[in-house]
Amino acid sequence: MINYENIIDTLALNQNEDAGKIREVLAKAKEAKGLATDDIATLATINDPELLNELFQTAKWVKNQIYGNRLVLFAPLYIANYCTNECLYCAFRASNKTLKRSALTQEEVAHETTQLIDQGQKRILLVAGETHTEAGFQYILDAIKTIYATKHKNGEIRRINVNIAPLSLDNFKRLHDAEIGTYQLFQETYHPKVYKQVHISGKKADYNWRLTAIDRAMQAGIDDVGIGVLFGLADWRFELLALLQHSQYLDQHFGVGPHTISVPRIEPASGSDFASNPPHAVNDQDFAKIVAILRLAVPFTGLIMSTRETPETRRKTLELGVSQISAGSRTNPGGYSESEADACQFSLGDHRSIDEVIRDVASLGYIPSFCTACYRLGRTGEHFMDLAKAGKIKSMCHPNAIATFQEYLEDYASQETTDVGEKLIKQELSNLPKNTATLVNKMLAKIKSGERDVYV
Ligand code: SAM
Ligand code: SF4
Image 1 (cartoon, rainbow, N blue to C red):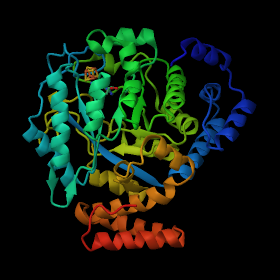
Image 2: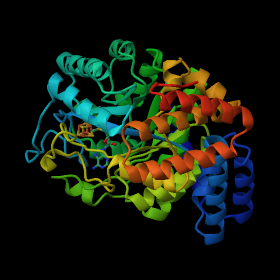
Image 3: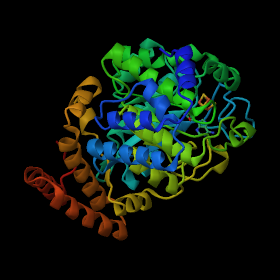
């Protein structure tokens, strides 16, 4: 799955910045058919400002061709911070005695869900530490049920993605039956030696159990999966090539690559000196490069940026390729109901409310989308990728993005955000082909007359 020697050799062969080769790869990238590991290694050598600018311009172009100006929004929902693992970078690790531990009751899960619904969220990412017991897993299944069952005013959560520890095949089947959206799991680092150094004990210390988790999830029928790397642990070039190898492996074995890739950078975490001084910290320029290269390497895979990053970094990487962002996030169980700073997983870089984030991205010309149509219409996995590759994302996702944005403006936005949003939607309608504009106008009329959850 991950060919360690091949990565080392490919990086060794691509150490010098070769402008001719780089421009060849950029030209190939414009075909939006993806890149090989050798191409990625070539792009990773870029340092010259002119070539860097060409990389960024190409990434912007590809992003715009495939995703247009849509931007999917979600929020994490942390339900428990107990953990039996010992990951050096995480505040939830078992030996961290300073952390206040809790697991939300089902009533509290419903309460947190209501808070998120009242902010206008429709998609959440359920997150928990690892307990590795049947009771712990049943608790997660119960929480999923509770979240889907919670309704408030016009709102509800329509898609629950999950980021929880690897499961057995049987438990992945149970997770699939719970109707999750994406199963997301970061390998953290694909470098076996570094992996061992930072995952000291607990089930997570087993590199292969984690690496093969996505296979088990897909074998269990979960065909939207998310992978990722925690940047800062090993050399980012190594991780990029490994990410691509993992993606290619999934494509070859299951007919579809990952639905999303996440690019978290290590943030300071309470009780972890390691998190404040990661061995391979990635600077802002390299981080932008990572996003741009990934955009070109896997053009149809969603790229996720969390509130770990500052508003400035988020704005910059949106242009370069990010297609989903979280907003208004809390990383402690119960964080949307009350602020408990000593129970957080890591520090956030973006503290703005969802309304502020939406106003900001809309004023930059992005349509915030809460769309969950594909998942509910069975357009997942290979089926979704086929549509995406046939260029149909825009004609479905764009109307749905505008419709869900209008829903947000009707039900949750401040006056200031409504003003920015209405203006953007009007401008968007004037740029759409006539047929699509007619369709969207019909959808908007339904929403304005009180109908909700309107999608194609
Ligand atoms: N416990 C499960 C696991 O580790 O896979 C799932 C939840 S864990 C809370 C989600 C992710 O948080 C981890 O995969 C890791 O990449 C990320 N994380 C942990 N500590 C972090 C830190 N200090 N800064 C940024 N991200 C961190
Ligand atoms: Fe536990 Fe996940 Fe944090 Fe590791 S990253 S300590 S497994 S919650």
